[in-house]
Image (tube, rainbow, N blue to C red; front, top):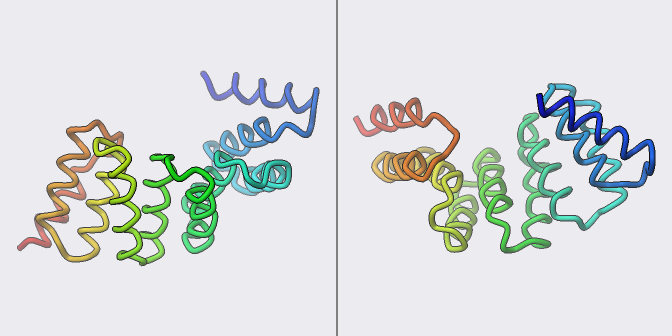
Length: 170
């Protein structure tokens, strides 16, 4: 029920002032959540043109690219977001996830550790840490990270990842 309300609010805001980057960002994320990716891309691009150094715009555009199967592009945008907002823990965990998806495991590990230095209890960072350790062939470390992610409250169901880690363990 919140999505239609948010959509109407963003559309009303743009009817009043079409140069509001936050309203374009809101519509972009709403379109993405509705799987309307070309429309999402258009609104992300407008938001970027209006606010090229806004860490929220850079971050969520990077997440959009990651979630639409463009991890190399995602890394670029999330790197920019991390430079603009070096203390953003959500940016850090998403940047690490994009690096992981791009197969840059060493860089992903360094970034997730940097993020955990900012917030050692961030469950999403723990989840990404598990993915990285799994990719690196470290099942015991992956299992610990997935267990921590669950304990700290990640929204991701880690059971499948744990099962794969147990299989990797042998």
